[in-house]
Each structure stands twice: as C-alpha cells, then as structure tokens.
Length: 209
Image 1 (tube, rainbow, N blue to C red):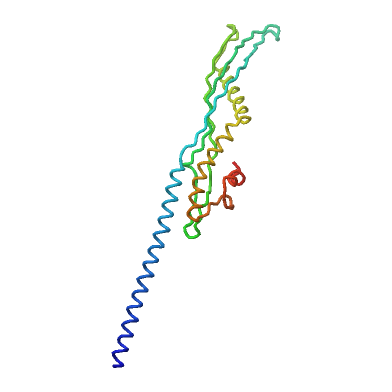
Image 2: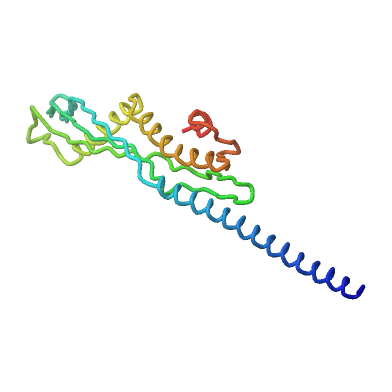
C-alpha cells in the first residue's frame, strides 16, 4: 500500500513538473512572439515614415546686370547691361530613407541615431530684357555663369529669411511623430541625443533642426 502511494506521489510530481515545464515554455514562446510582433510593427512604421518629405516654394526677383570693358588707359569704355527677371521654384527636402536608428528589444527603446540634413534645390528660370551690348563687349557664357551664381546666392538669402525651411521642419516633425505615437501606445521609448522624446515639443527642442 505504501509503495502504491509512493508511486502515485512520484507520478503526480512528474506530471506536475511536465505541466509546469510546458506552461513555462508556452509563456516563453508567447513572450518572444510579442516582442517579435512589436519589433516588426515598429520597423514597418519606420518604413512607412521613411520617405522623401518635400516642401516647395516660389520666389521672384529682378536684378540689373552691368559690366564695363575699358581701353586706352580707361579713356574709352564699352558697357553691357541687361534687366534680369528671375522666377525660381525651390524645394526643401528631407530624405528619411537615410535616417539611421537602433531598436533595443530588451529595453523597449528606439534610438534615432541620425536624421538627414535638408536638401535645398533651386531651379531658376532666368529671362533677359533690355539687353545692351557692343561688339567690343558682348555677352558671353562667363556673364551668364556670373548671373546664375549671383541669382542663386540671392535666392539662398531669401530662403533663409522665409518660412520655407521652418515649414519643411514642421513636416519632418509631423512624420517623426508617427513613430512617437506608436512607441507610446506600445509602452516603448523614443530617444535622440541621449534624451527621451515625449512630445512634438521635444522634437523642436532636442532634435535641434
């Protein structure tokens, strides 16, 4: 009788250990699955954000170009001049395909390692009016290169003084916020430059765009 009881106890213990081991493995499996699911979801969201964010603007300006060629110890000069009308389409773009990041599954943290610089493209349409020149001082390719260089330099100053860059940054932050919303909803953290990003305001202050 005692042997039978011992056998039952041993058998029960074995069954209990098997059940506990199965439950542990099942729990472990479910936990791993959850981590994998979260990671895949985050990676997919980053891929969705990883696109070209483009903000467009239009600028116009009118300049007068003058140049003199002097001869005979500056006693004789020949001038050329033109009225130059410029209409330019300008784009400020962030290529988020180039964004670098790290996913720490253990600590449930996404770290943005690098955000690409803005890419500014200026496409000017230059028209010449009231062109005056002489055979001894005609317009050449060098003049057009100087005008084009001057036009782009002036447009760059206008862009800096305009709201085009800040509008582009706002669009960038709007895209990055999609990652923040997802991480917050899943209980993860989003970091940049060693700081935790908790709101759009943090993007403005901490990303230093």
